[in-house]
Length: 95
Image (cartoon, rainbow, N blue to C red; front, side, top):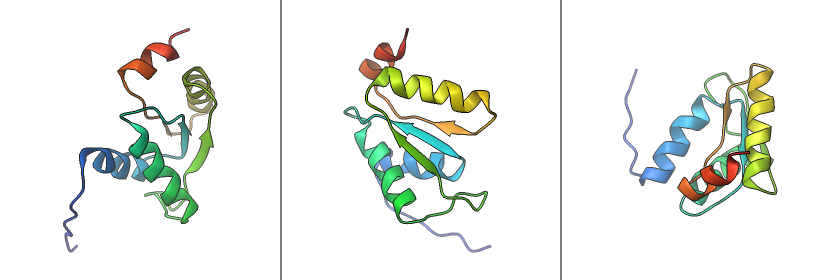
């Protein structure tokens, strides 16, 4: 297997890695994590496949609480699920 090197910032690196292992992503862009959600959304729209050979399902929510609920529901079905947030957004996800 040939290794390739990519140059990217931390947000893109996190999105790149999580996209590979994700089936569903519930996103609500909040600074400074917005670029991670943006990358994931763009890759899904381009039809990029994860390691399972699937395009990631993207759901853009209307609030941080909505993203938390969507993640909870998706995980309850057994799907590998991702969301991206910042410390402020995480506090808003607590019921």
